[in-house]
Length: 337
Ligand code: PEP
Ligand code: MN
Image 1 (tube, rainbow, N blue to C red):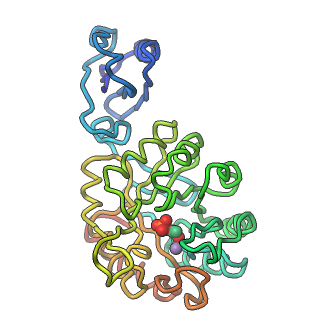
Image 2 (cartoon, rainbow, N blue to C red):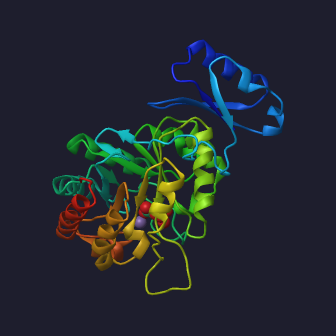
Image 3 (cartoon, rainbow, N blue to C red):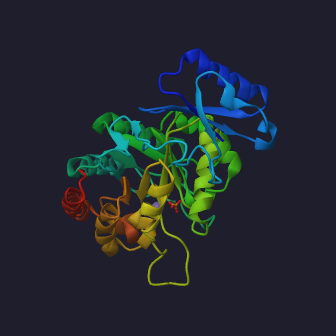
């Protein structure tokens, strides 16, 4: 349920509501908006039956949250969440672009890429150090050395670092280096991992599983939010369908659908979404037109030589061109890049 506080309710009234929620063994999430403060109450709401929140001082209204996801829902927070970390802001009027290689391979590779994507207008640097690969024989990433190289590239360019965490036990290591924790498509429903990143205060980029519904994506985000970490970005990265002409099918209707239901920002990954470098420019532009708050794009100095995902990776020139087109589309839809 949502307990809406009166405009100008005193802090002691809010404290009283929170205390009563906790007394009922439910969990309060206080959301302070510009116009009103609400307390989203989560847990088994049968425990709240007849609890009389309406009559507590400072309470304006009590209503049910209809969506199965609670803290993620627009019913609880009407204003968009803006995820901000270092150079990156996602969810505001300006579109955040995170670019970089699928995997960190060497200092020269990551630093050269960071410089090039920054010059083209990217505000975040991606690069996998811990890679979840379909085959156990494929390159698994440089692990901690890769994290050190990402930190060196951040030092050099100031770009916020986005990197994947594949298991709960790696979270303490990765938060020492990362500005954003990427939870990959294969781990979207790894609930112990979601709880572990939810206990940190490091922003999270949560990618949609290729066989997950958008409602399941929102419920996965809810795990992170319920843990106390409110800095969550959702990422559409394509789903598996009967279609084989692209690696995945990139459904862009997800973007406005999610915007209608959640305050969390939505990022699109046209690289994994298509699997083909020659489709990335158009689908990036289409994502911006559909209202994406951010893009995550794979870029490498020499895609043919990349140790993972080379076929869907842009070189520096193609990325620069993509940014130019996206900037024009952004302007047409009232945004900036
Ligand atoms: C990646 O970003 O390189 C990646 C592995 O993505 P996904 O989890 O979407 O497959
Ligand atoms: Mn990749």
